[in-house]
Amino acid sequence: MDRQIDGSIDRWIDGMMTGGWIDKWIDGRIWMHTSMDQLMNGSIDEQIDGLTDQSMDRWLNQSMDGWMFSASGRGHSAFAAVYTNGGVPCRLVHGSVKHKLQWATPPEQLPFDPVLVTLAEGLKETVHPYTFVSRTGFKEMLEVNGANVKVIPVLPKVTMAIRAALGHTDPSVFEAGLDSLIHLSDVVGPELNPYLKNLLVPVSKRMMDKKFRDKVTEAVQKMEQNGGQESLPIIKSKIPTYSTIFT
Image (cartoon, rainbow, N blue to C red; front, side, top):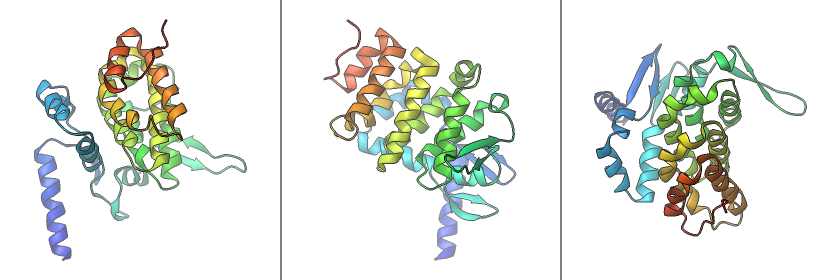
């Protein structure tokens, strides 16, 4: 059975490498992401539009989870494996009142690709300390000087990761995705508009949930405010009952 599983995983990795899904293999670590050249191509947009909301979420979850191999064993999530092997240069410092991150390298000196992308993928984590590291690290990197310029080139990867968090079944993961989406919108403004359509699909599903209704409304209003009037048709295409904040 183990041989069959190992063989299946090997074939899966071979297929991912052949298809261009694995970006870098560094010191035994795998950095995985969707081929963004394909995502920016019209044909892949048509394929994504043709997916049902449910199959889109499954596709995102499967493509961003996978099996990761590291020196500490196998079965880790992608983020846990990268973090364990030092791919995110920070550590959790436990305080008496609240925790914080201590960065080995200042966030403003780090490349947003792959560090911010990795943190965005970690938003799906449900286990401590990965939840705190990914969510806090993502926020802190977006707060550095010049973040608005640095994040634009990696928006396709970051928004894909946030979309996966927003479509997660765990409520805490959805909230983390929503908070991160608000932070991202504050930083990039209208640059987020081309990605709103896909981001709003899982958000709209939570609109009628009493637990999330106010938070979702706040997030959508923030995206309209930051995205300008051009964002309104996109928002209403996914949330027809939405009322604009512009009068």
